[in-house]
Amino acid sequence: MFGSAQVTEMRNFTGDARRLLKNMGWRDLRQKLVLVTIIIVLIICIILVIYYRFIDSGDDDGGGDDDDGGGGGRRHDDYN
Image (tube, rainbow, N blue to C red; front, side, top):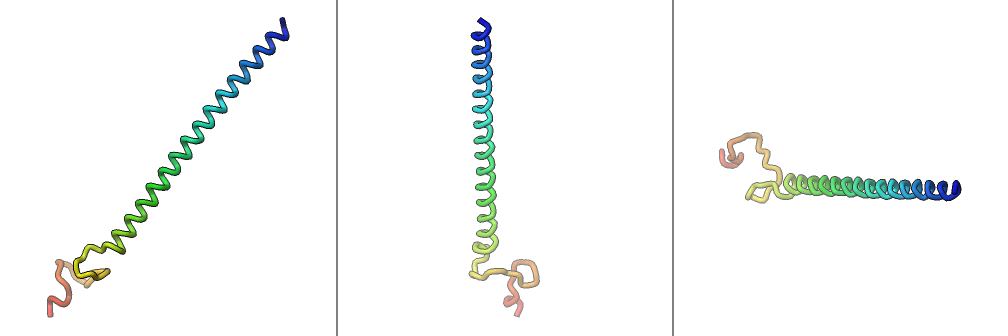
């Protein structure tokens, strides 16, 4: 009977180890999914910043940078 008890104990140990490894695998997968999600969100943010900063500058005259040296919404040509 002593051998039978050892076999049962080893089966319990292997079952515990199997559950532990399965949980570790799920935890690893979850962490990878979170990391990929964060990377995708950051890439989308970078694309939006580039789009709004360089492509859609917000002025209606089609120009790029509207830094005319002054404020108030009037262009330099309006003063002449």
